Amino acid sequence: MAGAFLCLLTSQREKRHEILMAVVRPATLALIALVTIPALLSSLFYRPTLYPFEYGIVTVVTLIGARILLSAVGFEGVLLSFFYATTAGILIVAGINFSDLLASIGSTRFAPLFYDPNRIAFFAVTSIPAQLWFVSRRRRYYVLLVTALCVFVMVGASSRGSIGALLIGGLASVLLYTARLSRSAAVTISRNILIGTLALLCVFTVIAGVEQRAVVSAGQFLGTKLALADRDRGLNTGFTGRTTYWAQVTEILPKTSWLVGNGFRTSDEDFNFSLDNGYLASLYEIGLFSTVIVLAKYIFILYFLSAVYLSNRWAKGTILLALFFTLLTFLANGFVHRVFFGIGEQASILALFAFISTRQDILQVLKPPAAWRP
Image (cartoon, rainbow, N blue to C red; front, side, top):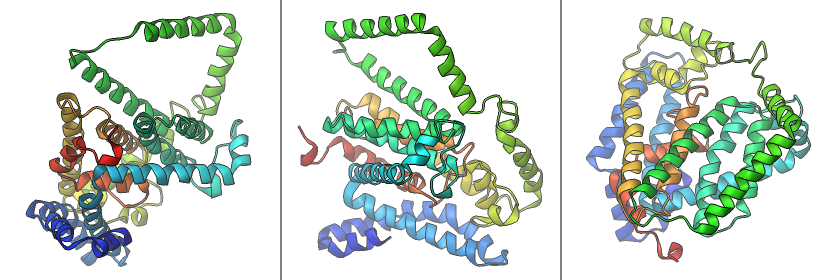
């Protein structure tokens, strides 16, 4: 919000007018109103405290601020800021808590500053796509060390949700990248790359054959670290007991204001457990009507990102694939983490930038600023 205010304050008159016109577009105002007003009314008239209403007001102002900043710097600037902020954040957290991070190699879960381990892993996993984009664009390969650190943090935190979300987002992005290559008539693989790839596969095969015990030990370590067979967190515990809570909420939901919502962040007040499901939490808090709109907008953004990336010749090297990767990882994590539509942390705010965006915002990245041109 402060950034949006400073942006308006320092912009030239023509640019300020352009930014404000983007904010007051009927489609933008209608989108904000449709997803916030029903829950705002529930928060104001049917809740014993003002906190849900206050949270809703801050959400509205944040959406407006995101629209202002997106009009000013574009998705390139937003993702670049996201990269610097999250990379600095993970380095600071790992540096301050380095001894705890090393201790997490064992059975201890990495929980710096008493944070939930799943939250720090979520912070790490959502920062990876922007790092990979920065490496591919700027050729700063040392940033891959930070990416490796993020993976280490995820494993140290024993966060299976973030690891699974990374696999889902990464696999979908690789398939999208491969599909773009296959559509190009000029797809060629140099002999050196082919020989190097085959040699690397041979080396891995030899290592796996010679060091079978080490491979088995590594598999056992991961199985133990991720608590796959644990009685409390194992694979047969219903997402670590989450499904039991989800069933309770689905039973209570029809007895509540499930169409328009019960108010922002009210699931924290109404239940003595965490829902750990962003979709179910949003369904309870902002209602079916608003949740469907938010989900539809996210699905449209993912579709439009992939369609432009596949069909436009200038899409290579832009932020389209990285943004697709980040959003899909974010949405996949929402199944086991309370993230979907809110202002709780950096990835949710980045998702709000995508939510408030238009097709023109995405198409503008096909013309990168001069500073990014080779």
